[in-house]
Image (cartoon, rainbow, N blue to C red; front, side, top):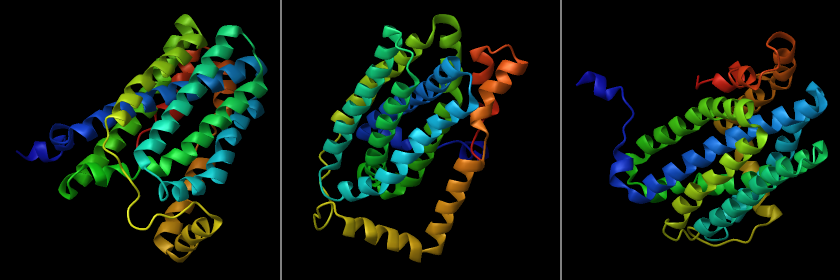
Length: 272
């Protein structure tokens, strides 16, 4: 039927158990990460009532992403990718536990939030390129497009529902509960990664080096399509939404309720 052709193809989830486990775990982890993104920003606003301080959270994410993102690609070419992803998952869980711990202890130190956010962003920057190589290794080539669509569905569903659930939890039970829920999502993420088959580097194994990073930058510079895509994404990321102003707008016009901020356009956006 015609309407079925418009639906997302779930064949990869049925035919590839390893991909299914990874997809479920990654979806849970992404959902938890979006919850924490909201909760950290809300906590910073609560402590400072400063849009500048909230905006600095974005800098704490962007800095490591730029500095260590290229390193992640070089590392992915030099060691077993499953092992690296598992180590990164454990490191991310440690950061999530530290965020929950500081909330439980009532430390209320903005600098500590920046440090923990930067630590999590560093891990994500290193592990991100690795995780993006899993799809063609787990799926038959004919299923790769459907698998990519499922990954996009999970990402945008997390972008929408994660902050909304976090807002409800913060409003009802406080920031500690939101952080703890994120920590629990790593159980599913670790299970999905642990059950993956070994994924050694393809072709010649190379040690991470500045030369390898330079070769990657040269490739991007020489490809107009890829460099254009990079610039477009950077522009949308940096200039697309005034995220740091949302808590101030919420406080001025909506009574500062966390649920209102969680339902702001930034958190309800969908793919364009």
